[in-house]
Image (cartoon, rainbow, N blue to C red; front, side):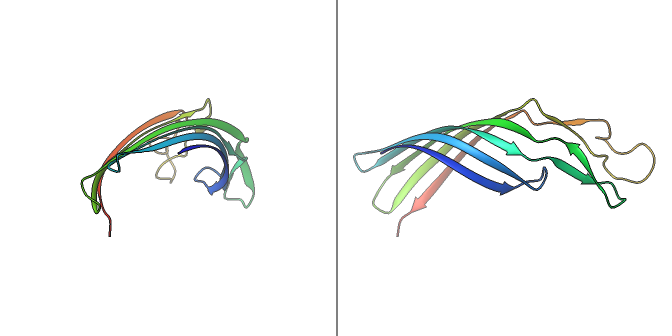
Length: 141
């Protein structure tokens, strides 16, 4: 099977209240001789964050960072070998990258007076890459 698609979604976020995602993707899946299943999927999307506020402790929210959009690209390979009609071994390999020039100020860790914590003067860089690999077994009933 071959699929082309578009997904629009909203999720809760640690950065602000939520983020919106608009993602286009392509997927191809093929079964060889009823034993080997291979699937390849890739996509690119825009991750949209609203204005981020923090509570200053005086009851008024303060703007920490204006709204921004990151680009996220991903690719996933799934493969499975079925030894019988009821048992199979599989693997998933996934690569995800977030392309961003946004750096958010890091909050002080630990609180209390004095010099703050380890990240008191740092920033969180939202440009990252992730590689994941999994193996598994499936038992069909």
